[in-house]
Amino acid sequence: MFDVIISGCGPTGAMLAAELRLHDVRVLVLEKETEPVSFVRIVALHMRSLELMAMRGLLDRMLEHGRKRPARGFFAAIDKPVPKGLDSAHAYLLGLPQPTVERLLEEHATHLGAQVRRGGAVTGFVQDDEGVTVELADGEQLRSRYLVGCDGARSTVRKLLGVGFPGEPSRTETLMGEMEVGVPPEEIAAKVSEIGRTNKRFWLRPFGEGAYSVVVPAAGVGVGDRAEPPTLEDFKQQLRTIAGTDFGVHSPRWLSRFGDATRLAERYRVGRVLLAGDAAHIHPPTGGQGLNLGVQDAFNLGWKLAAQIRGWAPGTLLDTYQAERRPVAEDVLDNTRAQMELHSTEPGPQAVRRLLTELMDFDEVNRHLIEKITAIAIRYDFGEGPELLGRRLPDVDVKHGRLYGLLHRGRGLLLDRTEHLTVGGWADRVDHLADPTAALDVPCVLLRPDGHVAWIGDDQQDLDDHLSRWFGEPDRRSAPTATRPG
Image (spheres, rainbow, N blue to C red):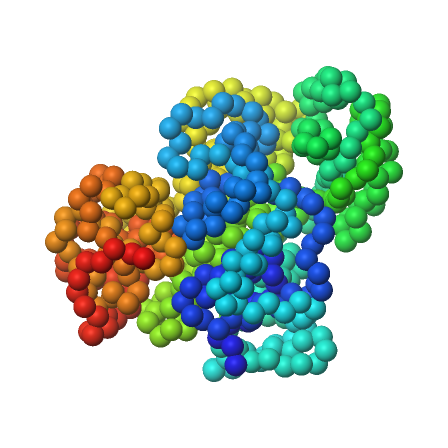
């Protein structure tokens, strides 16, 4: 009997497993593929995801394998300077090979004690008042208290659950890959600059070690059959059609296609079965938000599901997962729709693109769009209160170093500049740092395990009310003393 079975060991599933293991939840991750992905697609971690990695002590490992890039050019590939003073200690983009991200997150989860079983495809399940019986392709049945579908856009769990997935089907297809080229860089740069004035779905960008990232519209190249990867000849054909040359492309590292299908699950939870990542939402990759959105789902869900299993969750805590994350996904779907329109070569969208390009010369506009894409502007609805309430707290200085270094255990944290408050009976799930030197503009903040501000103030009774709201009933045996996390 497991506490949670997770279907899918991509970044979302692995991150969720690790978050659950921080709270000693018994986790089994089932991955239908027998081997990890082998293609070397490059993905990008945005500012908020980098912050989350720092919160769990993973960022240094990610940095060893990634390459930093400026935090610019996210929205519809409109390249404007990085706004000054972005409110993050990690105001950059980190490009990493997708297999590396998945390996590091899976290693993190297994190091914490999660079990991962490859070749375990979920084919059915039945839930009751006590748990979920999960059936695998070989007929084996497993039992858990909860099941979470992190099994991608074609999610078996979502389909078996009967949750609707409304939205728009793909209207355009685009080829994407990494390969080597056979012409000088100057020739490529000149041609890309010429075509890029009107065709924003076309580029060749140097990626290092002689390789180029190639993106080209896929009209007439097996449109609609995304299950089958394109061939190198497909790329050559489309490059010749659009650019008049195939640039001598050869030696592909990976080749794929993507469309602009945009869909959102009607519900993220039905009883003891939940959805996260691409199982809950799909959208075009413009802006590079997909992996980040899924990992952030996992961070939001992990501590709440663990609290439910450990028995201290307030009655509605697990419901806040959908209430908080589904609107975020709606916003991502809308901004990717807008970006795809701005990639169109039609006169109307091109006129809007030129206008937006002018507007982004205003720092406020440029900053707003970057903060939206990188998810540092998210504010959950926690009710009336100061502007900081519901937002994530940046990695501020504290007397023992940096704030995020205190969050590695996945617990709540009271950051107390007054030195007069206590977490009392919640000390088994909330840490307390009394630090009058903390770089805050408010007396005290209560942080959830995902780093969002759940309370601001200096009154003990008000604090206790909010501790109960987010962390359940107190354990009267817990000592009411201020302690440093870790």
